[in-house]
Amino acid sequence: MKRRFASILFGLVLGLAHAGLGAADGPAPLQAQRIADDVWVMQGETALGSPANRNFISNAGFVITDDGVVVIDALGAPALASEMIDAIHRLTPLPIRAVIVTHYHADHIYGLQVLKAAGAVILAHQAAREYLNSETARLRLEASRTDLAPWIDKDTRLVPADEWLDGARDIVIGGVRLQVKPVGPSHTPEDLVIYLPQEKVLFAGDLVFRSRIPFVGQADSRQWIKALDELLAFDAAVIMPGHGPVSTDARQDMELTRDYLVHLRRVMGQAAKNLEPFEDAYRAADWSRFEQLPLFRVANRMNAYNTYLLMERQGD
Image (cartoon, rainbow, N blue to C red):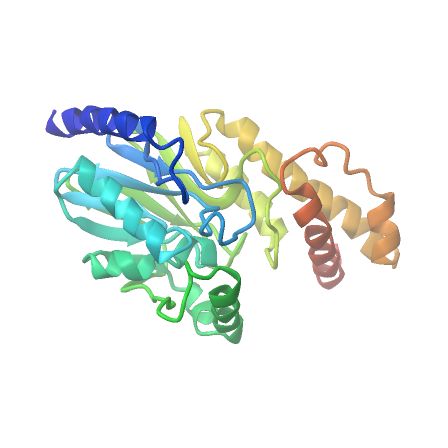
């Protein structure tokens, strides 16, 4: 009851605060959106990371329990994580107990150092350790210090988990059960999803991109498609994707991501099998179903090329 009263009060405070923000300079403060009893999300922009948006391009969430707060993902900059902590503390005086990392892509983890400093224990899948200690991760951070300055700077660092998970785990905090399940290698080798069975809320990480083109990168798209089928078995009423608005239509939104991946594999797989040059295959492909989605022009060509190379290796 106290938490619900605090939630209502928080909404009123936010409304009053935003009434005077129209002429203010600088980025708008983060807003927490309530999606279930004591479950909140921060929804990032549908855009590429930039200084203008502070790398606020991914989603994060938190669950308030009777014994503290569990955060899912840490956002794309230390300043964003600090704002998330401020939002949490306006809702509850309880401490942040844990952060569960769905995967170690930069836009989900650059806020970890702030949450760790606040006393949270970080949990992630052990497959992330290879990337975390790689030259790729180091170079990405180095580039971000230039491309995303001043939000990513010399003090921003990569933070390992305090506890590396090697399988499914049920975590119970303050009477709330969170089912943590590995579903990689899919989008990344270390993909985790988190399900709250009482609330029927699923934190899907970057296995689900809603209302926009997914970022495929070096993903194992074959396993990713299988993992999406596994997510449907959770019978979730609400899904927080890694990017895009919260979903209350699990099947439809998962199928958009799934159908895009299937299309990529079919078109690029046939081209690779026929030894057709990538440029010719890309020009000939029918992208009409997906070309109106946000970030299509930015991401689709790269997704197609990476899938072409993947299909050459997989031979199917």
